[in-house]
Image 1 (tube, rainbow, N blue to C red):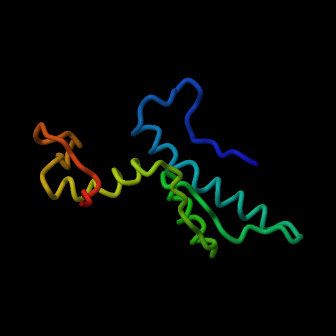
Image 2 (cartoon, rainbow, N blue to C red):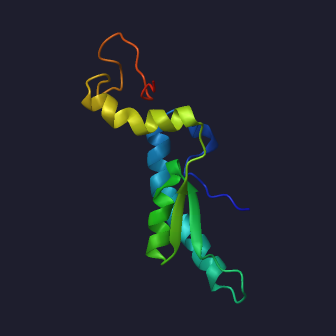
Length: 117
């Protein structure tokens, strides 16, 4: 197991999501590419042939694609979280939440799953 630096110093903290995400997107891809190239450059049978990443690290698939690797996204979440994430587009289109800030447009109950009789 190895870690990749996110590009922030310990003093930076991680309370600013935009700063944190921008740092990850600029720092981690070249570090991951070098790690994969170093591992695959060593003689032996243990070579990286695919990448499995969590949804919030999808940028790693681009690194893998650039290196000719197959990839897949793992979304380890609860069913309710998955339903929420996959329903956001519909909630915006139906005018239930604002696309700009994600806040509800009106006070009413939102149902993510259709009711079955």
